[in-house]
Image 1 (tube, rainbow, N blue to C red):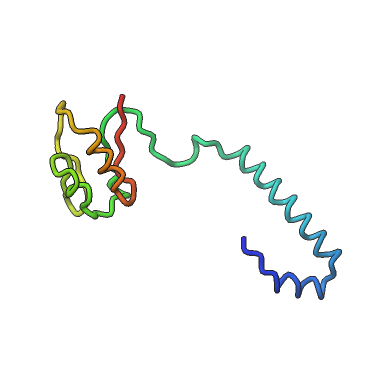
Image 2 (cartoon, rainbow, N blue to C red):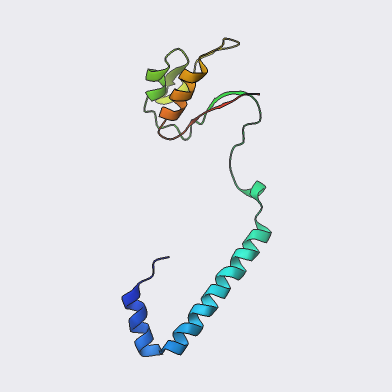
Length: 117
């Protein structure tokens, strides 16, 4: 939240410092209570997010913006299909993990993930 000092000073001038102090204390208490209630209701597993559970190379096509950096950096492994990055069939072929890591780090939206199992 943005604290607008001139606005608060103007309110304090008309409403009084005692009122402003009470309002501030009640606001802080309300924030603490609502955060406690939210923590009890909302669990980490309720929050959206994809967790990789199987090994391999994955591209989040929804996050991909089609910048083609992956295909330019590692053309043997990545290609562009329908304006989005795609993984070429690599089967059991091994690939250069250092090259892959630099390609993953080059992705501006972090859409590429690799999980070793």
